[in-house]
Image (cartoon, each protein chain N blue to C red):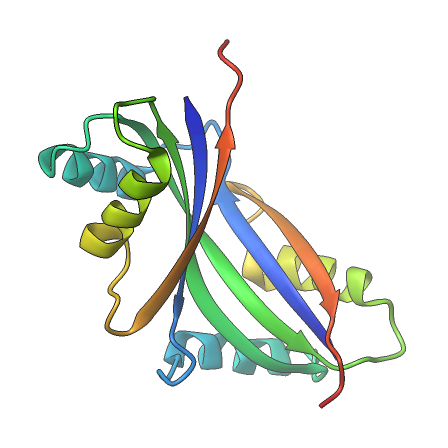
Length: 84
Length: 84
């Protein structure tokens, strides 16, 4: 069993209106020290062992479903979970 | 200048319909090895140095705006960015 953490973020060149809205909200709460906010997605997947290497499976899942690679970047971390 | 990464996840006891939908989609793409998906938010903040410790500021921002502590947990990582 693997625990996989996937981070999906907008590419640097893509505008992030949600991040801008959060930044403006933080400014209106007087956190003027915040100069930039970018918002992304964070996913935790539990994956059973299979015949294929887990890195290959996760990369394929990211490309096919979890990230929109036209406008988003992704990265992931794989941890081997101890069987209960 | 600090780069802060904030992770907001649903508490373990809270149902995650979005995660279930993603899991079902992965199963219909034949990734049957995926046994669980939990979806959260990932935020990257750029924060200027101020009088207050940055840990204290980020914790307060999470409690007040970035996370709904009734149903969500948060954690964050702080990196000191090199001035350009």
